[in-house]
Length: 115
Image (cartoon, rainbow, N blue to C red; front, side):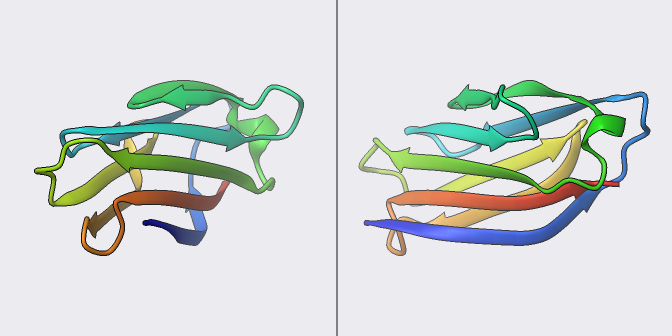
């Protein structure tokens, strides 16, 4: 059963001249996922499973709403939870955890800004 988990009004302070590095780490075993990140412009990045991607310079992203959607599925029947950490430039933006009894597929929606 899939369930959507929404996290809104998140923000991170990053210097204008720095690249914004978005990272997702799936911490629980036996899970696969795909993350789509909606940034201004035509080149929205995708991450398969765990990984990182450069979103561009902070100055170009400041004041704009950035959306990400991570679809994480359980493949291992012995798994008890879905656990994910999402970071910007190595700093935790959001950690998500839910028991498999609540959902064996989590769609994690983030809405955030760069300050």
